[in-house]
Length: 124
Image (cartoon, rainbow, N blue to C red; front, side, top):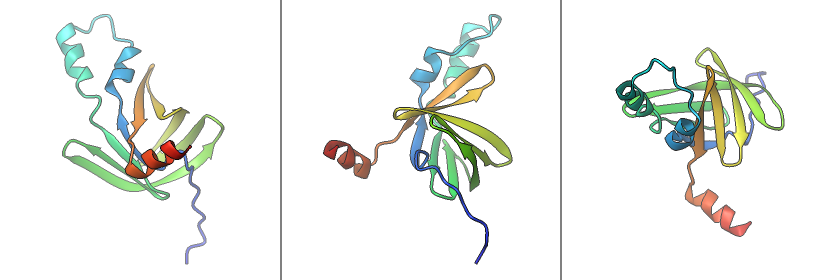
């Protein structure tokens, strides 16, 4: 048995989907980017699904899939920092959403409601 202890953050667990509407509502565009290019770029959002288990992270973007272990580096009341696929990401939670920084912008993700989560929400 491995002596490595795995840390997790329960706020991460489950499936999340990129929220195009919320992401685009605050996106800061370069002044030189033309409208047709903006529309194409905005169409990239809303498709990515991310699922976290206590040790694994799976990303699905249309037909592209990636899966691997992630590690929690640290957390505070509003966020958690993880390393996945060699990249460090700080994930900031706000209600049933989280966001990650993309340069000067943010990409928002919304928790995907599972039947179990829907039943728990009705009970509370």
